[in-house]
Length: 319
Image (cartoon, rainbow, N blue to C red):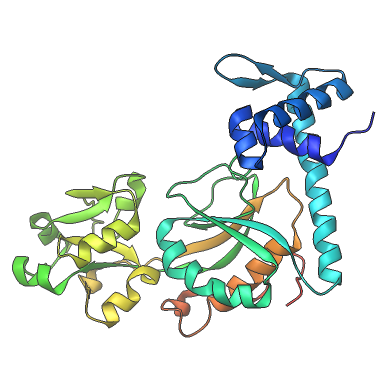
């Protein structure tokens, strides 16, 4: 029995994509080829890996166990390739990165030209998701997450911290007035997140010291949407400095109630799956981001801790 990497790759792609058609499209090959390779793999293993129905594909117990081992095999091959390329002085291959849209637009995209100049052979694949996702299922190598991490299956590296501020446009404040205290927010349009609700807990204090609970009047799923709504004069919102620092500096937004805001920085982590070996490509990106995010031109560089210059837990990558 001699399995091929092509057969194993096809099998895992079918598992991840959920159907032969979707897997074939992802791999850029005919459905018949995908089906034939999957059948050949099952024949070599002399077992059924997937149960096929008219509506879905389900892993058998044997298929589930084989999928776990197969992922480790492919990851080991990828790491071996990375190390060989690193010894030759260049990195190559795909690197799938996931981040929320605002962080992708305001932080990652402006920094990526510098990374590409260092490692032109690395093919970046960028995806934006506003919520948490399964990294393996979405075939993501590296994700950037803001806030406390709860998933114990993920390795993480602290890249920095971000502080949020209440802001509104000068036009909105001219029309509706500037709130003098937290209680006065009840008379204003408040722009918040449709999900998760925890993002709508604004750290404000009432005059008596109680923390304020805010009920947004307008909701959006993306921080970038809330930013654009605030700039358009639609209300007051609470967003991270990495999104609004330039808007404040250029007068598009004005900070509201700074004296009543409890500034509690939130961590920014680079995360990857614990079951995966750390590739040189991932390590090189994390090292680059940790350094680049400390640069003066980063509008929120003051909130990046000095420890971010050391990539603990990740092997050093060539620069």
